[in-house]
Image (cartoon, rainbow, N blue to C red):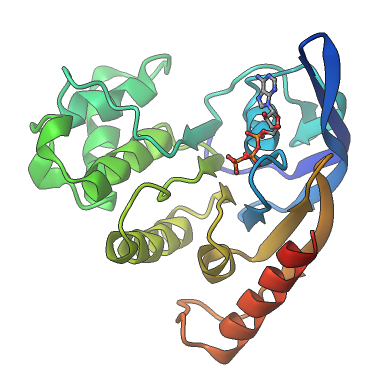
Length: 251
Ligand SMILES: Nc1ncnc2c1ncn2[C@@H]1O[C@H](COP(=O)(O)OP(=O)(O)OP(=O)(O)O)[C@@H](O)[C@H]1O
């Protein structure tokens, strides 16, 4: 675990059945994601972003085309792919430490290795002092950091993030974006972030995938070559934010 494989998404299409009628949500999605890359996915509401993440994580195997990780077809969920959602999904009756340890439930590690990994990941997200606290004692941003620790504790090669900062205020959000950038650089894993926030997508991504709706298709893949650590006031970042916004308005 830990060394991410290349992800090949080949001609992926997905339909749901709504009221006995097929609803085409994704059509002909093709993308190769390199190990250690940070990919941001943006698109208007309902264009299939979360659906694409569900297919990548292996929560839904009912689609056309292929999704391969390290050459092997995605079949169900895997300890090698962590996921973080918009709501932190921490259990209120467990401490932060116990919640993070849940990410290791099905791992074959020894208790000592598990305890060490939990401590290291609480440290990574700056929550060591809160390990014995309960979720209601944390702010929204701290709870989301705990969810990121839980997603990473198993040392997956890939972390999928579905609007992880969507419910946070602007300042907390900006802080967590910086943190996520640092964590991604430290962990050297592949991250795929779904977001509505174009600035966030450009600030964090090596490439920004712009989806167009009905059915969801890739409209553009925009490379972001600005050096890291990045600044939001960087000219290139600002110009790319405008460019991506332009594509979304056309979509
Ligand atoms: N389980 C399901 N059954 C039927 N339709 C679904 C299901 N899940 C999603 N859909 C439909 O698929 C389309 C894409 O949904 P999805 O959640 O992937 O979009 P999204 O781009 O993530 O949206 P948002 O940005 O609003 O979160 C929507 O029209 C949604 O109603």
